[in-house]
Length: 267
Image (cartoon, rainbow, N blue to C red):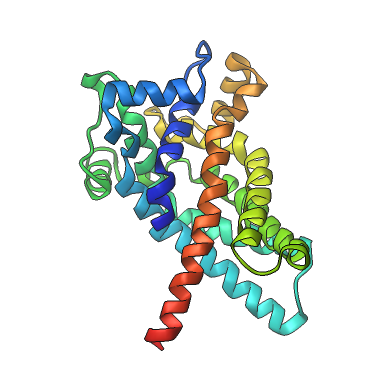
């Protein structure tokens, strides 16, 4: 959640770029300038409450499951192979994504709201207002709209991110030694692999969860390819990378510091 407070503008920019139509040819800089011009600097943090709630549900679940299963596997069989790490990451991502889908739906809608005409905006006050209104106005099942796309993306993301991070950390440890430089380098490698592998699924997930007609992920995928071309599946690549890499670095740095304080004062 602390890391998200820092990288939220890049996540919002990524979402806006993924929702641009086939005729849009715009850069990260122009999207950011447009947001600041029309919504003010605070517009870059639109949907922050949903982003924090997403971390409290989805990320708590995925990191907890991955670390727990990694430790149990290591106790029984030794350090997992790279394939084993990918499998553990896939499992953790799938379960975590299902838990976090309601927060994900709220986040996509809240970050997308500013691009709509004033009369079409949902104007959710915060994530809890969004959860309540979606449940009342569209039914509780809408909170899990796009679950298939969300879970699919999360399985790829976590296999790539957690598995690659763990492997890169292991390989770079003898060269860089333990410390922030190691965490940063491993995180940026993991981030690049993660975005390259998961961006098409992320684009489809974003479109599905923002849609009002309940379109499925296969239909959305085909529409994107047909109307915008295959490269559109990687729309928002740069802001996604600039979000995932630093977010991973900051997450592990904060985690290690919080762990140190916990074992110092909390045990």
